[in-house]
Length: 295
Image 1 (cartoon, rainbow, N blue to C red):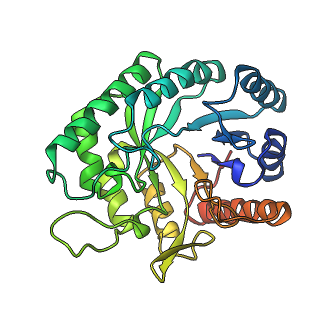
Image 2 (cartoon, rainbow, N blue to C red):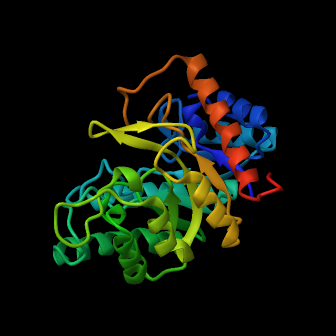
């Protein structure tokens, strides 16, 4: 078992992100943005700079947090945006030895599986095009249960797994998304999802785990330190341990800054200290769950 995180929430620069890894004793990193630019979109010289600095520091990148099919992309946006991104990402992942790239499944109309089969067919068609390239390149797309089509319920995620049917398409389970996302099964009015229930239904396909926590207050998400919200983080870590999971966890606090919400800001010191404390707290929870050896 290892622990890492999206260190762009600690510092925008690669130097700062490396320093955070060293401060927390991490040997691994999740790469998303460097100075505000996604790792898949950096110019070639910028990517080489990141690669060289990570190599010199002895830190291994384990995943790319891409923008492929994410909440900012709709089902009628050009598919070429996603194809271009996966084709840029694959050689970079191969060079760095990165196995996973986080993707989603578009901001599509909401409803239960079967609500609009034309939309479902188009989502599956697009994801198959993306995943086929990943499979050919020897990397794995991990779909996050975020507020895109596949995150509307465990059934939605399982439907995508069944339809795409590729070893290069697996799941990343985020503890902090279910409590803030409506469960679009059955008939409205819909209730928020339950993190533990979601995990139990999809656990056989979970390749990676993101740690967030928080609660809904006045119909808005209020993120918190792990174990202080409704994400059931301690219970989930205990279940992961019981199930023999050893794929690693990645923190994505959203407490000081939120990557996709520029209105949430904090000064550099608060941003750094919050991420550092979040990392320590997650490590403590992992040990309490029975993970005695962490890298």
